[in-house]
Image 1: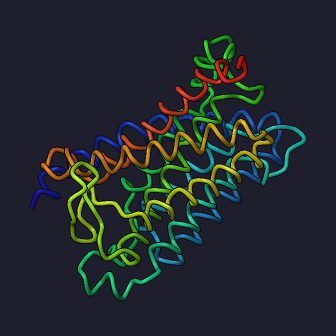
Image 2 (image 1 turned 180 degrees about the vertical axis):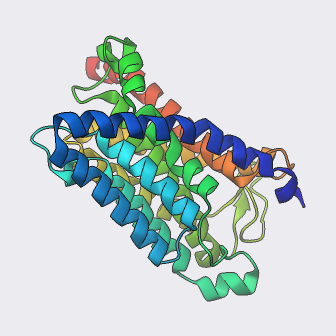
Length: 296
């Protein structure tokens, strides 16, 4: 009942993400199509292929697959560099998020169905995809780069590689960490505890964490951050920023689940959207603190 009452929040997430991302995709496709047609073809083609594979695996609804295609293409355009090679774009971390989420969701599915906590078989919805990947697309856009990096305050405090991409990596890594920690924690741990009180809770309860699920989530965040730093031709600093932001965002996700979600104030899409946003905020803090560590 509460899920239906809060369904408007899922629509808000879509409205916050998709109009801008869809418009940005049209503009980027036109610009790249005019200046570098092969790059535009590769980007649209590979993004579409990923969407079709996800749809074929029944890991997402048709609208969710279309949403994923749009966001992936925007991320690829935003992170394209020369000499152009498709795997040196955000395609790699997005693919890592998708693969990790798919594997984690399928592991122990029978046990999760018996417990009544398994994800529905028709796959993720468009709002779920937007909640998990939308922030990465927004902070990696040309507008975000111009506001934050190109002459903005981040240009004076960040590593040589664009800090905007570090924010995107943090958001993607948090999305993977959240899914993996939740899905694996439900089947690996018999004694999860609430993050707020440390009292024992049943598997699948909002805000309940376990050391098994947390470790799995941290590892997943590390994998996505490492692949993201490599694919964007970054260094260990880019990796650390993304990973640290994601791990802190993972704990923030559990905190939101234990408080606002359990009280019926937020639904899961809103929690995921805010958690990926928090990962970018934590990454910003890490970037701001980097000069202090370098001066020691």
